[in-house]
Image 1 (cartoon, rainbow, N blue to C red):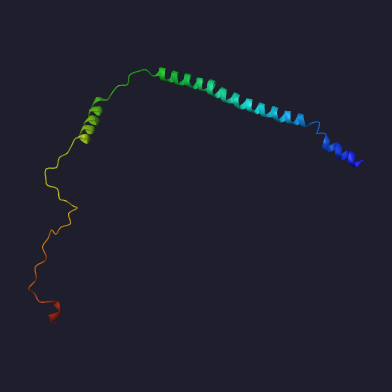
Image 2 (cartoon, rainbow, N blue to C red):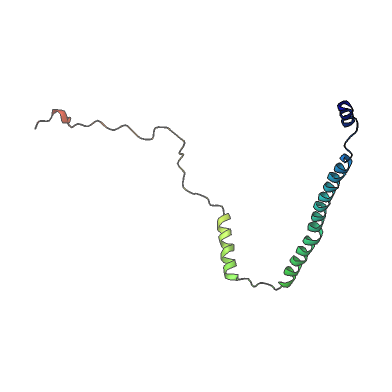
Length: 118
């Protein structure tokens, strides 16, 4: 009896195996369709509303702003001063030249401090 029962268990598959596989496949398809639907709604509906809102905001402010001419002229002069080429008329010292630039000190004729008495 055990041998028949063991053979019966191994020889025939689980009758609900196909139903389980179909259930997993259907759940995966539903989750995938939810993701694709959410992406579609985001791309086409929310972005359209956002673009329409941007157009409305840009169309509502079509007035010409007044320009403060004294401040503009002051800024223009500052830019011209910044970009102007400055020429240095004095000869510039070469800081990378390491040649001797001073003479050695002259010998002194005074006696040393060690020979003096107190």
